[in-house]
Length: 339
Length: 274
Image (cartoon, rainbow over all chains, first blue to last red; front, side):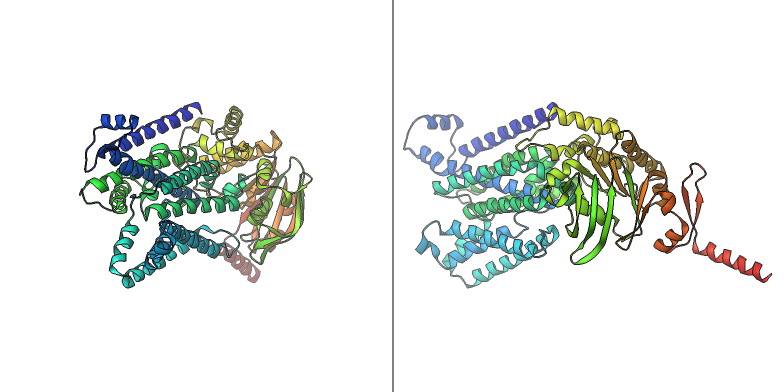
């Protein structure tokens, strides 16, 4: 057991190291290249020069938001995959992201920012996510049990309905709104709201702590629901709480950064290959590497065609998709349960 | 240890079990037999609270099961399912350690020395200690079943429930699994309820048998009392010949294929005519 604990600690150390390197790299590169030594000195002295404002006004906020969103999406993926014992489940496939996107599109169409201020977009994204969760949940609860297969199918259908409605909104919206909608549905870590960044960071870290409290339950879930129940896990309560937690994490992420797909799918999958499927390490490892992955993707998104910028959701989609297909062709999906 | 009073239970509004009454004393080895769909597995599911009973009650050690939490129940009752394909990406040791989950304190994330010892004893008892580093996916069906029993033993239960643990196993592993069950019952005085399909195995290994028919108890008794050809032919609707096992004086059930039955009756007819 000590050997296993040591291995886990080693993984946490390695992944924290990778995250730090990625973050440092992201601070340095961009349209203006700033050597790392200079950045360290920037931390020490107050200043109002251009480099100071680039690092602290533009790059650092994006890195922190990337940490919050990448981590949150990854553990939401781990939680959902653990619950559903299906490696293809993620916030995206359950329609949670779709609902959030629909909420944001509606608020852009109705110009809620004019009346409600800058927080209208994240708030409506969050409301959209919560509405979908509630709908999916109520529909699958009809039979008295939170049936996993039903939940998945309902989620996929809601996802389709949402994207169709978004198309409809795009078709009837004004040209100047269209750009905002498109950019938002592709995801971006650009924000000037420190307030939002702090909230996102707090929620994703609290989410990690709460999900960790369920790590043993998630391990039991990997044997199947009945088996988990035979091991004394109150499965209905755990599923309900975990589902709400995953939704909250996704809702907040989508609300601040738009739709960023594939992070919740690819990161947990690769971590399962590397560190194993014990949720006591898988959750932490996925959080760290998800954060690193998203920060790296965002750095690529803003440097590849600088001074122009790609939507980060496009970058995660391409990199994540290719990695995933590559992993699939090399070996079978890591089985999660009795599928 | 366990008393079941007037239990009725089923899925949705359909009754699968009706008016079940029986009692298991400490240290008994009780076999549950019956045709497909007679409610054997449902009975086990009712005991472990996977299904809610619609009527009746079950009292375990002086406490009603419906009043017990899942965790409390799992500390006392362990369940071994039919061969399952779950947990393939775990090692045997990790798998067996999952059996310690019901005994965890809140906010306890790592196994204690005690947990480790109990798991090791359980693996040794089930004969899978030398497989501890192997992955479940590398084991044979029989070895996996033994590992599942070890996991159930790691729960340190007072009552062990097994649902057709020998299904899909070859005869060597069937005997190995049931010898283990018997040993746990005799030497570790564990109370055991086992659902079996194979009547000959039930005859060889169980002290008492419950025969279920269409969700009701048809009869309860020793193998000699239950496994007679009129009872089996009535419940299973198939002709059998019951002899005494030449190795041990227990009932031995021989199946009779239809073709042979026809040939025999033709023979009889011919001798009648002749």
